[in-house]
Image (cartoon, rainbow, N blue to C red; front, side):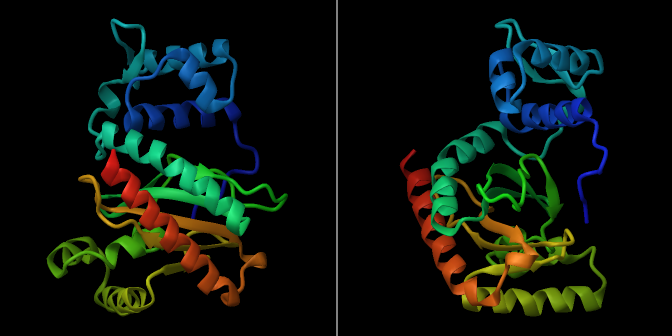
Length: 246
């Protein structure tokens, strides 16, 4: 469970998020960084300068900045992540408009899922942006939805770190997920947060992606599951079609 520290240091948070974006999405210009982080160009330049100094970034001949030596072993292909994010964002916005809760896109990265895009709801009490975060796949809603699509051999590798009882519980839950088509994470990764996720059908050479809706647990109700599950399934199908058309 990871909650944002009550006294978070904004500059540190921005630098860490920037490092994650460079690793996942590839080279960026200073103006791109400023837009993504919501900071001034001068602040973006200072953040990049510090990352270059610590080898988390490097400046390319065309003046863009890319991931440095420290980050080059990232598990995700940058082009794929960038493409998924760009294609997913319109679908996430439509989900938020339809359901009124925060929507996320994520992708399987080893035994974790990594959030690659978030569109926040406009409600005062809402789940915030998770872009760049990673969560254990067997605990998150989107991760569980993806695990439910894997064959026995792939699943065995990812569940190997769990103790026998935990792996058995996970396998039972995955059977339920396959039957109803969506997965639920009810405060399994963060107190006060409930999420529902579905896997995105493989398309355009892309596999292991998922979409989720996340809400404060106080606003969650099991009665909403059919509505959320249907909305997510439609969005995932539409996203797969768009990925296949790219």
